[in-house]
Image (cartoon, rainbow, N blue to C red; front, top):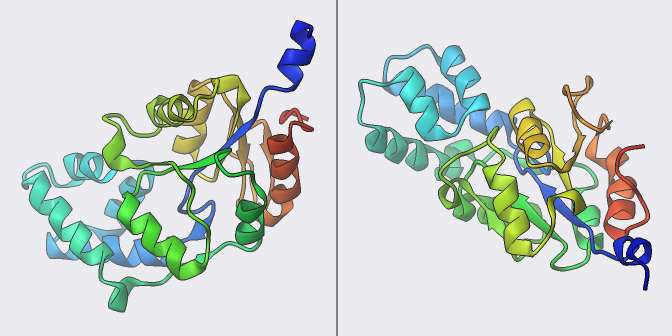
Length: 221
């Protein structure tokens, strides 16, 4: 077998962000962070804008540095786990069919959220859960560091160049690009800077993601 043919049959992997990419949790997260901010007498809009770009502990360091970060995190977890008040989320159109169409072991979730919460949301929205979830507790550096996506690739036994990252946010896009992976943006009217391809919706991207996973697509056209 030539090196070219060996390259052609190398398996491909798809690494998904969760919130904003597969699950629409905008309303949920906005309510949670607004409630959290009010508890500390902080500007809710300012806190939410920081939280969109950083992991919780990094958010606390920026907006509530004088408070115990572990106390801040405990309150955030309490609010996020309160599905009675804040259980507002749904799967994006096409997400279920896409995930069910991917080969087992060929995809993973890479999220700044926590695994137990992701599993709960997937259960409620009917999405299948992959074998691998790299969450906020699994890495010391979050997005936009390349560490989360590189960790996922390593655990899958994949080379970065064989991985497709599907993201909706600038920090996640930068994370995937810094990891040396192909990055596609979804669920935004305007393309995030740096993405190799842009789709206004996950449904539009789905057939191309499946093609990449099958080895039929290059990911950059």
